[in-house]
Image 1 (cartoon, rainbow, N blue to C red):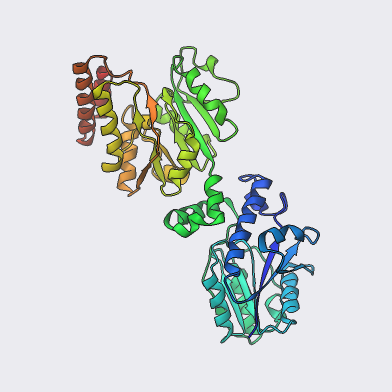
Image 2 (image 1 turned 90 degrees about the vertical axis):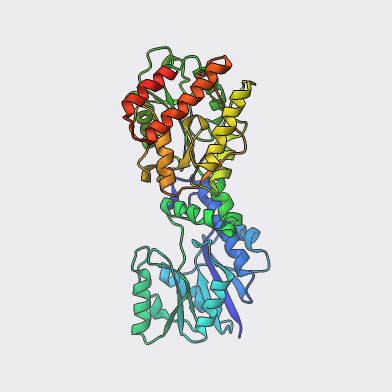
Length: 443
């Protein structure tokens, strides 16, 4: 029995497709994402034994689809007024070519597989109609052996009862209905976030056209808490200026009394907060728009391609950091580097000077940085550890100042020992004000 698949789609033209994802994505990015959907869908359709038809709109742009599906497919424009009428007329046109069954699929479901299409055809062996549900109450697939107008008549779309209403109309007309696997469609920003979470658990999604595109397009917000940083602020800006058109950058000042604010380039956005690193970083997070939040200290020296390294780690993890390094060649500074970075992997603990980055939703789910005078990064790491979050680490390290360490060997060792002791005191419940005073004494 001959079978046919109709891919029912818009042509991916900027400003005319996936518009509900704007302004999160630009019109060009929306078109690029839709192109990736189509490439993934085309790959699965071509694995089946069915003939492939492409039914498109607008009717003067169809040639662009041949770059995706190939010249050997059959293309025709959508006809009819309403969405339901256009789907019905497409199915009617294809079934008139002596096919035993036909399924029509939308293109908001890049996770559709050959198995889903094959199963839909098997359901048509025993049912009059098949529907493929989406998580939001709609459907991504409708199939039949003869055109059934009742499935599409008097229907409205883009609401949570589309599938229910369509199935009810079919039942009331006396037809049997089978249901394929439920899939996720991608219409809105929240759907993108959910796809990325599924992608982290599924290698096949990471390798897909859609997965690679969404990995590349993750938006990063760099959040820098500052307070009296006139000795470091120029050097940091020099590193960040090349990133201005590639990510969002926010400086959050805690009431600097030196020349820090007057030294910041006007191209950077500056926020003002109550003093306290936790307050500053939390305000920056609230005011930011990125999918990934990257908290950076002002005395940091970034590796060459920090955004690419962050995105690479975040394809598998919800949080991570760069780790730390020092320019000092002193043996005990090298030891401090090794211990600090090993702590990320061994104890699942990261600190602020290691350049923490985290999924936006997870950051707020974890309660943000706790409002503590000290140890806010340590407590945040402990919270993530309690939540079972696995940490990733970038390939290259952030170099940071060793200004809190004395120059001589014995004093260096004393500071390292005292810092470890303060963390132990915190875990043991010693009042944070007492620990904060001791930390100032250590420095």
